[in-house]
Length: 453
Ligand code: ADP
Image 1 (cartoon, rainbow, N blue to C red):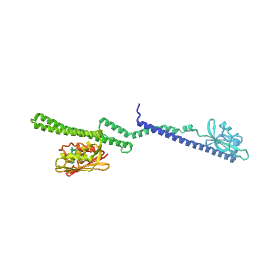
Image 2 (cartoon, rainbow, N blue to C red):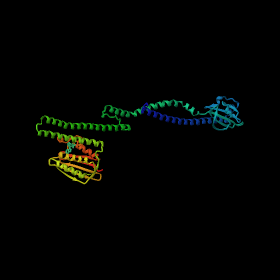
Image 3 (cartoon, rainbow, N blue to C red):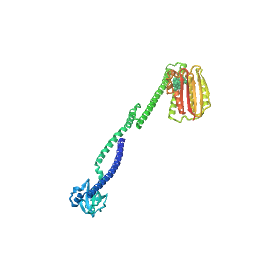
């Protein structure tokens, strides 16, 4: 089926509506003209008849001229009104007698105009009785052509009829131009979407005109959507590149160690060193793959992580006990745990707690302390981990939640830069938030707030 452009459709609608309005207005106007015409004609008729009647009554000379037939036809035609003078019995005395059918009309003598049909045409007729001294009464009869019937009248307003098609052509042209202008943003949206589809360049944006109308708002919303998509795509690309990079390093180390082992390790001690290094890199890769999998599964919303009512104080206490065993630098881990239960995924919440305490220890000072607190109200559970370690520089603080972000000072650590990103993701998974406060050289506090249900 042939496609009809929306511009053409709207213009046709525009024209149709305008046509209907024009026709209605024309009919109304004609109705008014028609009425005014009729009233005017009747008034002209009655006043001309009145004038002739009073002349006949008062003007002796005129009376005589009429009786003697001394007047010609021109004297009985005034302002489109034909005048006839008749005697009491309807016999013609003077004036214009054009229609025989008129003779059959009885003389009313009332001086009022009535409509009559003569020879198939419409007229108004008016009879007035005149009392003449020393003679029988006479009648003055006036006749005027009636205004035309409606179709005829339409023809008489030919200028309007000629103007109609012109008006409609103008309406169509105007409609076409206006809709073309109105639809410009739609064309711009389509063009940009097509350009993005072909080039894959998400940096392109739709031109907005700042008018603030619905289409402008639509363009702005789509642009905001492109912003979000571009950011997400960039983050995704960055994530993939970082992940590959992080995996490449341990793989290179493993391969190099293996080569060294094969070519140069002469004794058991050197081989053990090689195996230890390979194992360390293996653990690193395993941790990385586990984190990557967790990110993906949480994002995809898989059912891999079911939630259940969990005693959080018991969970956190157990993590603290484990961390105490591996805490180095003579760091003490203390806890202040209120009895709190919440609906969480045990595996995830354990990982969240481990990551926070592990960081507190990893970035803690010699003989430092880590304080773990758990509290809650009816709706939320709050876990905070505070340390007196190296702290985080103000410029690093906004970035620590990004995947693979590590501040320059912590590059030498064994971390992957995924721990806090996972903490945030897990907090979000439990309908909560994760926040950090820190002062460089003084310490840091990480607070996670989750919904209990
Ligand atoms: P990493 O594996 O490097 O620890 P994280 O995502 O856990 O990665 O942390 C990101 C960065 O945030 C770290 O590299 C470190 O610079 C900073 N950071 C996290 N926790 C702390 C802390 N308790 N004290 C100081 N800096 C921290």
